[in-house]
Length: 392
Image (cartoon, rainbow, N blue to C red):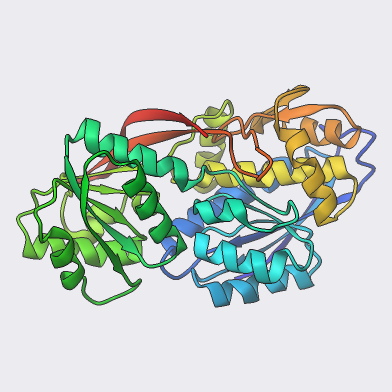
């Protein structure tokens, strides 16, 4: 899926530095495939800044959306479409596996900046990326610690097993949990995406009667995995899932209230959260979901960095990412984004305080701190029950 939207500004918010310049921003999201149910709301979060800026800035904003299909090869094709169309910066991708492949094979060789709102694999930190790959969610090096804390402190489990999708995201987060967990991990079991049955993998994970099972995957596989679990077992073993399975439709799709399942995910706790939530609800008639606020922030920071750079150049935009986001200067929030573009274009020092977090980047393009939420499932979906703050 692709499309181009040009939002020509009228009067408000803009300053003399914008001069009618065009800011170009691509969007690369999984609108189909295993992450399709999550990717579409994340796409909505990523395009929301464009809609809020319409008529509020002297800049013209040009954008194009492409579908990765939650597949690395399809993601490369989609990313190449954005590069060929001349986009210097991209919000995306979502899946860590896709982000790594398109970064190495498409974006980095073509000097295109990418800021992912959902890719959390620790491997991304160490990419040889020429300063071009950034992200607004925290690395799973942090979430592994959160999972371990919840398993030990909240649930009191001294033994555990992990069930993880066999890609960069699943393997790395399973390993991160194992490293941080103070108890005994009895089994680490990988599973393929999109299988018709997960009975064998469940049997391996549950063979030693673990105190908790950590499941790392996506809704497409998670629905079948939990259907198999509830049809074959008592449903009493505590499960802990990660952000890829934070989906309000999961219990109804599985056909079970899933009351034995909790989860952890990066939360939206930035200064602009309330404004973002209201505008998202108004624009899409839906509640924001996992990584939607991170998607808003990824697009917003890229636009601010582009305005500060003064040109549609990936390396030039990359040079401004920390300067427009990290502490120091006039505060810019989602509600004052148009003013922020004007200030950035005029050379005013600014710091973006986002919907998901303050969005402070380290030298690797990772966040320096993050807030996670613990959530539980019920027949109506899920609800947050606790927040946990971690620093890198």
